[in-house]
Image (cartoon, rainbow, N blue to C red; front, side, top):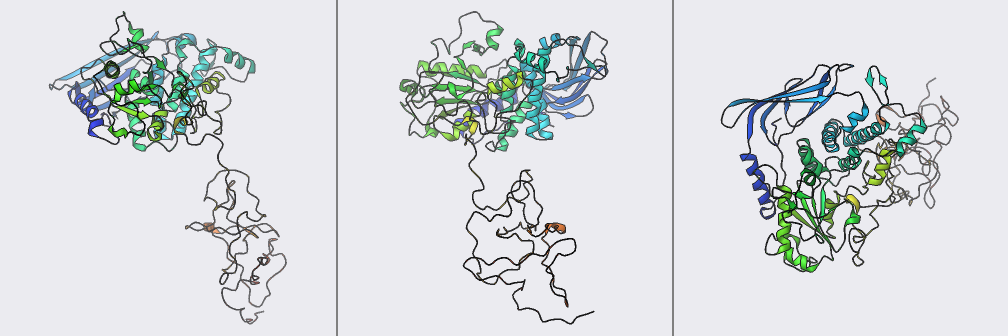
Length: 608
């Protein structure tokens, strides 16, 4: 609503977070800002804007209220057809921003963009930029996730990627439905096999990778290992991120430091162009040369290595157990991190060649075109430190994870996309590709044997789930999960409850024989057994079960009618009364009828 930005500092300490907080606060106070702004976006007749994304307040169908607007503000929108055909050769989109400058001047800024129109799918697909599509998809999925749930948001990302890749492979096949272009039907099996063999166009080859990274991002990933504050912060930052920033936030960069070349961390002497900058070969205003980039999988980690991971907001420095002692001494002033209190370890920024080059790389990754350069916070992660390693492994998106929609590895997801979305994700019992490997089995020379490798993406259990329901357990209340009901006539597997300790409680006629009745919830009613939901009624081997009463309470025991003997045959409706339960082994037999703690009642007078 305020069009501002959100920053979080978990576990704030002045030594670690102070420089970063100071630089971000200074940037927010000194950057050029427009106040009391309103923005209107219009487009050519035949098109319309359906949704807006960003931090703002919607005043009208095309008017946004912005209490403040800075150079970091980002707004996105969906442009859809309002009419069947567009007669013009271009579609024009115009935005007008009316604001008050910091000097008190009322100004207006107008931006107009003309987009060519084509009836060929190949031309439209050829103009698609994977980075821009990923940024827009992230904002669309965030809107769905906030309105419904994260499962629907991940399904939206997956479906959009599959449909876009499918359309790019099918080419220019004219087909319209109600005057609108539509993809061809998918009933034919042979064309589907042909599409699987076709390669993904060059400009869309990274789209499956970025889509999988979005599904495993902190803003969308499932599981209970993410604090709500962290998820909200990620959602807010992703909503207002520009294309270049969101690219690195979605798919972080991981550099290998222990084997970087002698020119890494120094200004590049070669002539460079924009492609070198976009390919992450150099960074910063001084064109600092960057180390070798690695794919985001634990197979690239090695126990004798040091790796730097940057997602645009946070930096992690992963240090292996068998890292070179000379490099450790240059960075931390110690030959080993084993048994050292990590809160006392500080990253050196000068004093030797290696530390100076690393500091130049860290600073260059935070530099941009604005004069206010942000200071990065580097979190040191020691191999085997499970608390920090779990956060580090959130970013290993090419490995499979344990939450719903995250069991895809990168190879699995590419096959899924190429098949047009046929099939489903791997099952949860399938181990991820790097789980049984130890650090040192890829990306560098193998180190000495050590303990098993870190879990994937914060997973704790990689194999099939442990066996459940061995012995009697109290069934959960109202799980609502379909499944076959457990056998009701067999006795329970656990030890029998103690019998005949004190006067027996009143027994309901629908109570199961041989199976103890678990205590019901406080709200009344017996919880259903695991599996298929079962109404709150007992099992009667002599006839059908009695229906439950209103409110889910069990029916009361049958009352004896005065002047009549208790019936022993079938009752009205074909229900036979419950015979007395058998005597427990080694105990006294139960009473023949409910006695409620007193003797049999005297025979009442008979009314005829």
